[in-house]
Amino acid sequence: MEKSIRKISAGNADILQRFVGTFDENVSLIMRETGAVIRVDGVQIVISGAESGVNTATDAVESLIELAAKGEAVDKGRVVYCLELAREGRAKDICKLSSGTVAVTFRGKQIKCKTVGQKTYVDCIKKDAITFGIGPAGTGKTYLAVCLAVQAYKQKQADKIILTRPAVEAGEKLGFLPGDLQTKVDPYLRPLYDALEEMLGSETYLKLMERGTIEVAPLAYMRGRTLSNAFIILDEAQNTTREQMKMFLTRLGDNSKMVVTGDITQIDLPDGKKSGLEHAVSVLKEVDGISVVRLSDKDVVRNPLVMRIVKAYDADDKRRKKID
Image 1 (cartoon, rainbow, N blue to C red):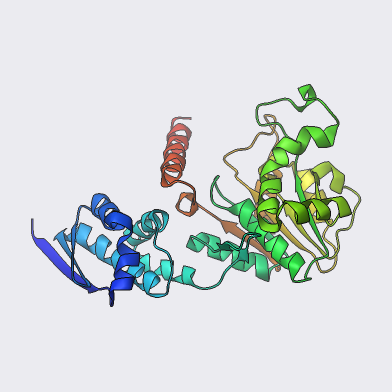
Image 2 (cartoon, rainbow, N blue to C red):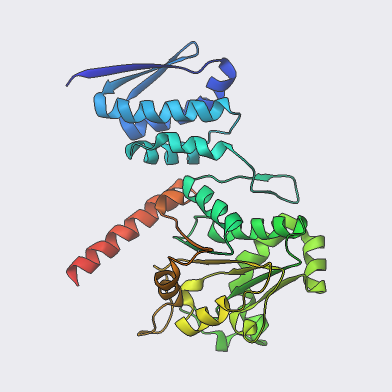
C-alpha cells in the first residue's frame, strides 16, 4: 500500500499547544480514529500513512489549527466532531464556530455553539418568529433556547419568558405522584429549571419566578391566552397531539418568539396518536417566518460516547423498519 505524507505548519508554539491538547490527547485521538501516524517537528505537524486516513487526518488537523489560531479551545468533543465532518469532506465548516457567543452564564461562562447544526439553530431562532428544533438528546436544543430566551429578556427584547411541556408520562403515571398538577409535572420541567438557574443565578431566577416574569407551566395552561412580548419555549413537543400543537402555535402574539423542541424518536403518546410535532413540521415547513432545524447525532455535545449510543439506536431502528 502506497504511503502518503503531509506537512502542516501550526504557525507558532501557542497555536500548536492549543491544538495538541493535554499530553497530546488530541493527536492521539486523531491517530486512533484515522489510522494515520502524526508526529510534531518544531511547529510543524507531519502526517503519514495510508492515503485515505492521511486525507481525513489532514483535513481535520488543518481545520482544528485554524480554529486554534482564532483563540478557540480544541477539546476532545471538537476533535471528534471535526473528524466526523472531515469524513464528509466538510471539515472547514467547524471554523464557522469561532464567531460569536450565544450567551454568558451567571458565573461568566461563555456559551458558544459547538456544532454547525447548533449554529444554524441559533441563527434561525434569532431570525424567525417560530423555530422548530428537532433532534436527539444531547444536541442542546432546550439549553440553547433557554440561553437565547434569557438574553432576549436581558436585552429588553422580551418582557416575559414562558417555558412549557406537555404533561405526558415517559413510561410513568402522573396520577400516582402526590400533589397538584404543577407539583406533579415539576420533575418533567427540571431541565428547564436547571438551565434558567445556570443562566441567571438562584436568587435572580427565584425573584423572576415569583414576579411571574418567568413562567414554567404545563402546556394545558396555555389554552385561551395570547402571548405577546414574550419568548416562549415548548419542550418535548413530540408528545403533543395535533390539536395541542395548533393551540400552542396560535397563542403567538405581537413581538413574541417561539421555539419548539423535540425528538421524534422518543414519542410517548398512546398508540394511534400522531405526534403534533411531526404534523406541524410537514404542514408549516414552507411558511415564511417559520424555520425547521434538524439536528443529528453529529450535534450531540455530551460525552462523545453519547454520539455513538445515538448512532447505534438509529441503526437498530432502521434494521427493525426493514424487518417490519
